[in-house]
Amino acid sequence: MKRLTSLAALLAASATLIAGCTQSYNGGLGFTDSLTSPLEVREYQKLKKEQATQLQSGRMTQKRAGRVDFGDSTIAPTDRGMIYNTASTSVDQLGMYGQIDASQSHSAISPMDAGGNASKITNTEEGGDFDPEINRSGQWMVYSSTRHRQTADIYKKRLGSASLIQLTNDPAEDRMPTFSPDGKLIAFSSNRSGNWDIYIMDSDGGPARQLTSSNDLDEIHPSFSPDGSKLVYCTFGGPSGQMEMVVIDINSPTTKRFIGYGTLPAWSPSDNTILFQRARERGTRWYSIWSVTLLENGNVTPPTELVSSANAAAITPNWSPDGKYIVFCTVIDPESDDYQRMTKADVWVMNADGSGRARVTAGPYAHQQPAWSADGSILFVSDRAGEEAKNIWSLRPDRALRLASPGNNNLNAPSVMVPTQ
Image (tube, rainbow, N blue to C red; front, side, top):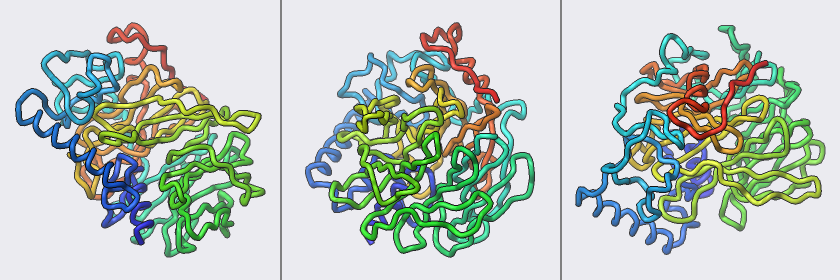
């Protein structure tokens, strides 16, 4: 039971909401978990006590409604966390590191949201639609939904059409679907066998084939290699007590290759680079975004950190269709958020090397789980219409990408262009 509770916390961290489970943005899966040592708990409690003392003294303030800090060198390492010194901070709307002006209103709407730029793709008033993924043609979207019952099923929808196709109808949870590069297969995660495993089925539906079957492990979030022959996914419950990333051959799934510690992996559509999120092992333990590359000789490159924020968790990275750009989410000061429902998150874009960061969404909404379509638009899950249910929206990031280009706001970052078909 404890193992499933921990996994539920991880699913919440990926912006999937599960009733009765708390959200976790730090990879520790909650301090009640037996895998967290007393030393780690004491270290974290000490950090929180120091922050509270600084806040009470008036020398520092929380960044709950301010900008995301991506590690400006003017901030001392001892000041990193949920707090910062506001006295000497002044940046443009989008600064050197994609920072947001702290004076900007928490309820302000991003200019990218204006003029009908954002459009609603799904429309459910009960449950929610989430886990969007677009095939390479940009014509079809696959996603998870609880619109018809408490547990999630997999649905497929042609973009621009009001109709939808229900692909799975199992009383268990079916989540995190992803298209194969040729669009003929869909891999997904399900707990229909008692714990979370990876399954695969035709993109038109039909019987699902179980690829993993570890009774003592939970395996989630599959992602296809560019040639469609392999899958990377993450697993929890092993001796390490950490989320581990594993690669399997679809035709020989029992042969597994461990490639490192991390969660929610996303394989590049153009090469063997894999994005993932991993938590720092001290302080807040919030997630940052990393990458590794699988080499032809079977080795894996050392992990590279692409996004790390002093005051926010960086989560759910995903690729543009050409593999040149990355879209991800930030949650400012996660511990100030609602523990049962994420209330504020934003979508960002950047180059594949971590440069040229620019924010795409703003306002008092939870914008989550972004996926980049072939036409250059970004799909994401949001409650922006003020509804209780979450739906999938689409937004063109062109304005944000232009703001991140040289000549705008004195940025010293490479130009970021919108991918086109």
